[in-house]
Image (cartoon, rainbow, N blue to C red; front, side, top):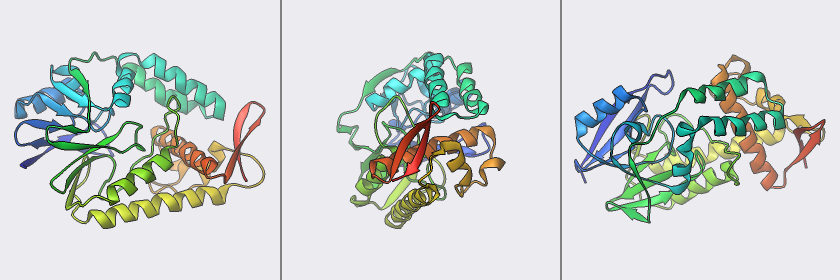
Length: 295
């Protein structure tokens, strides 16, 4: 299997780049950033019209909106592409979440930026079976509910599931039931059972010691769950109060920009949901706002 790495500059500070992988000059894994210029450049450089998506985020889906490619993705991620076509529906969901948890005004403002996207999908969308173009499709929910990895010949194309330097953000998708942290941990355990020589992630460098990296990530997420648990008490606390006390790897909560504070709030809810499933935390409604307390 021939693998060509294509690095695409992103209009972001972190991450700065995303990687698209060209396999045997025939199929792309992920589709680059969702801007016309970026999509045009990727298409001109590859001339490939078959795309496998790891997930629906804007730095992975570019070709879908600007080229008539044949695209394959998980059915949940297909639904989530509606974010770009009808953003107002998704903004309303997160407005309700903001009220439920009494999040600051910047939370909704961060999501309102999504309203600037209104992109029509040009790609022909297909959902995966267990295999596609000779690759095994592995459902790895956590970062998103329909995130997938691709596996063949002891090589894993990991999307945002396993990164070489940083820890993947665990997403909170209120319109999908589930336990994102538990799902992510379960996905890592699933990958740990595969025989893998190298992981090609969507960001950062290839991972040549996948067994150790997966183990380290499992340790990180479980330690973070314990940290969140340690911040609970028998008195109910708001999510924002808990988030402010977590030792985020990107810095103190108050020093984060509004977008990253929003991500931190989401991840805090994800960990609290995990602790609730573990019977270690309990939701308590105080004056119409959801709080959490230690069980």
